[in-house]
Image (cartoon, rainbow, N blue to C red):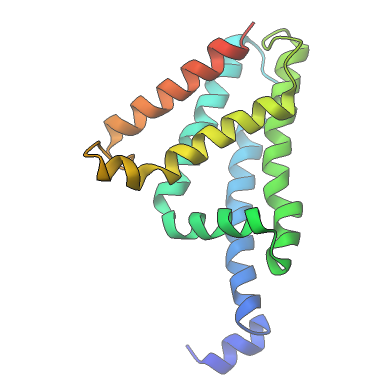
Length: 168
């Protein structure tokens, strides 16, 4: 690959960086759309779709660990070249989760007094924490989330707390 060709096509290193982030973000958005765009039909359907969302969230973060760390760091800082991607794609993932929780709330699957945006933030925040604290767990001699049994335990524990705290 020719550096000049990359520079020409992507208009520099920032353009290439942006294209990589945008492609990655669109994969996450399509998964979220597939899982959470349909109103839940029952409490079980609500729980299963949230579980699938969590499993996909972890799978993407494990498969693209370094990319995800960069993305979350840059989203947290709202850097100029990633700000548009954050607001146009990543925020849509979050808003889809919020909308799914609202739909569950309207159907009586989520308690009325819970704020959907805070509830979605809790779930995303808990999952991000599990991912970002993995190196600490490993240092402490605990299994990594790369271990399927450990990942299942962490997902089950997180969702048990989430569902028992929000399910009607």
